Image 1 (cartoon, rainbow, N blue to C red):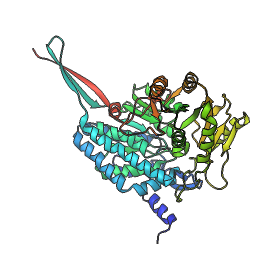
Image 2: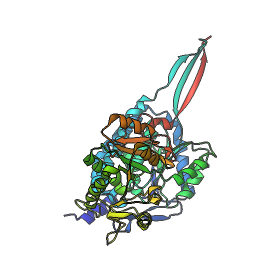
Image 3: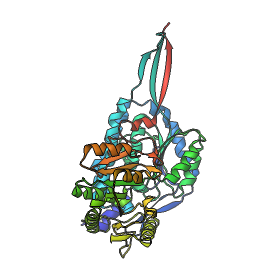
Length: 490
């Protein structure tokens, strides 16, 4: 009988660990590799190829070489490739989930949910591939015909984060494939294995050589910067921190690249006095604890009406304090480790600063003993207004509860941030729901709902939370250019 350890090893060993360029696997030109860590054990999991600039330029050359033929590929067949990949992902959902848990830490149940969510982007964009439309019109003077056509932008650089290593890949790759764009994908150095597995699936689904190229590297800046300066690249899509996003936007100006940026967040979670308290607490657990709090959509500031704040905080502390912490592969575990020691160190620092300023912990505020980068789910009250965790992303399982008295006060507090990705609002009053929603400065709002992500909906933010949208009908627009043809009729 195969042991759990043997099964884990078999799943990890089945993933190719080279660079995927031009339809083939190869080592880095230098032969260098870097370690991928299991954050639940703080031990090495696997080594993968460590690319340098020359490898990235080879990947771009492969993408550029395949662009013309791929743009001419029948839209129906582009969609069928995505559909086949969708089916292959579902057929391998258990192994893909285990792989993700091992390299990222999230519990298996949640990892399975991400794999299914990731596959849905392929199914959605498989259907969008045949719905790329143009138009024809008569000019106002009647002499010309005005033809509008849509064409793929061209070779794209897709940079994906570690917190959703599969879903953030399919959310970018799906519309690129559907639109007819070739691409170079640079996955996060903490979680490259999920993307490498996905590359193998797409190749198996029939994606032509050179359309998808994957470059893994422990030195992202050295790999990305030369690509941004290369005239063959026409688009960059990035999910990650606002600081890195600003740098990429500045670099993109050199070649006037199309950019899509899904950046940081500082999500307010607002509970009005007429809210269903049970639903609000459950929604807060979802919005805070999804992905161990390591999500740009995570509820970062919980504003609760003063008449409910004390009871809400107590109920939330019971729920979060009762969650099972452990290695994500163990049965019943609900909270895995943070991604690395830097991530845990940031959470410790933010919580410690708040406590020093007078905040009180109703639960958590500590790291469990043992290996791995674990941090206990934490609920804080009496948080001082100047506490850093109210003004920057926590990216961990920490929920600061702040009371408010009226709508104007909470809306001002919610909007007092350079970020504007998502807000959450709990109220049973429809007019209040519309009134507050229209004043919140965010790209998305969860109304009596703790999870907003959906492949059929446009995902993205305003202000310093990003540019452009991913998913929904508009997701493919980010990979299309508009061409206009004027034709005289006399």
